[in-house]
Image 1: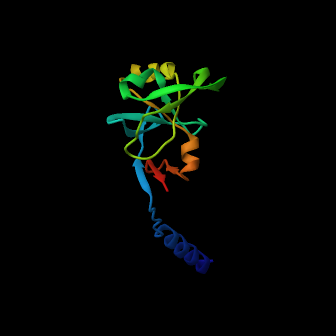
Image 2: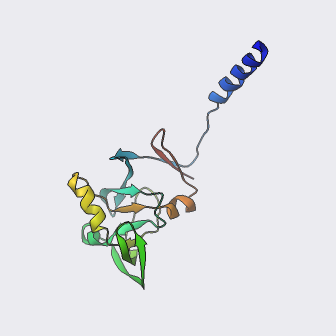
Image 3: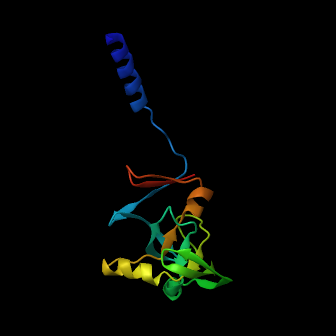
Length: 149
């Protein structure tokens, strides 16, 4: 019994000392009201994205296109169901994110934005699972880090 306990202790200690290295980009996550955000620079303006692993697409808020200097055009006549109900989806272009490459679609996020505005916060859009999957990214909620390969 004592021999098994010693073996278990040695195994646990060796596992605890394993240091996983990550050769990609590491981005800090910020938590507010139990939600996570990343800071980005969109067309030279510092802003935030809501990290939403349940969102299938990464989106920019088209109601803020003039603020951030991007353009958009209607993608299709079909509407998509999302956080704000049924929404039109737009192609976005003429934008650059300094921190990483991300293909955004666009939609009207004014209802979502209203929630954050009450807290004195503004987001430019949503970082969705499409980006996380395509970049083979993962989130470590213990350290509030987003790891991008």
